[in-house]
Length: 226
Length: 192
Image (tube, rainbow over all chains, first blue to last red; front, side, top):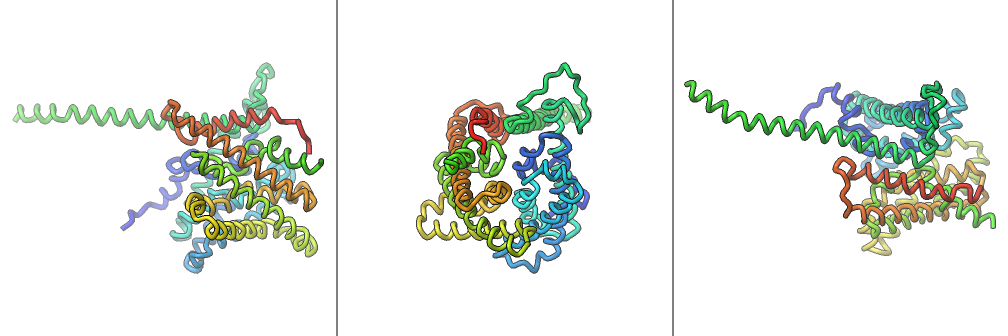
């Protein structure tokens, strides 16, 4: 039997353990393309989360009605419907932002993160779990996009969310707002995070090892006492 | 002349992978070996040209006359999904070895952002039918070029001593960044 996972873990696993960008390397196109500024990254992540949550909800509600042969096509149509809603709302309410994100809003349809979650999770779980999972994944996506956008915005145009935070004497790094900067920044960020995880793991292993080495001595000491 | 410029603009100057970040998933996932990267690029190019043709026709002959442009995304993605299915069946019939080599990657073309991106860009740039075909061929050639170069570099990279934390995706992204820098040398050469 499958181990029962608490509802809370369903949400939090997306934040770090299974972070869509840093751990699963999913949804790279929007991640790299729109993170010229932190604001764009946040807007993109929110739009993606909206689509992900609602399509997860719908798909998990009708998961027993969809024949397996045509499931991918049905998922895509459901996702595309919600993307159309987001696109129309953004065009009406935030025309500037919508223009800046351009074709990357409709491209949410083919974000592998969304289809991946439907296939791997929403189609096998209850609606509540599916929604929590979607929200968690969306939050993880938000963390990744906002941090990447913030780094690129600070170094590339001296600002954060439109407010200047580095002095004029700092020459903006042009490469950061160019496509190459996106690849380099994300590569270095992932490498750094891997490095931290690896260091923590080796430290834990060493601790475990030293504990194992000490244990026989302790039991020996105990035996002498007795 | 205009058509040739559109081709080179899509293939080199505004390379789909390195300038627009479209098709990053297969670019990172399938670029391990040149022998699988090149066929993948060709299959994608084939689907791209078909997509350019079919979506142009659907948009201008169905969606615009009936004023249902908001169905753009739903109809385009359905077209792409069925085209991929068709290509899969075609390859299975024609060449078994190629089918086995590409097997897992073919369905992935559906969720390749480059394909849907191409269809959307054609609408956005208001290309004519012939221009759309050239744009599709150019974009496919650019994708094949980028993924093949990447695969060549990664084959060499296997022999290199990469720090443990950077193995896999991180080093691939950094290499892609350097490639994008190199491709920037073409920037401003053609403006279409």
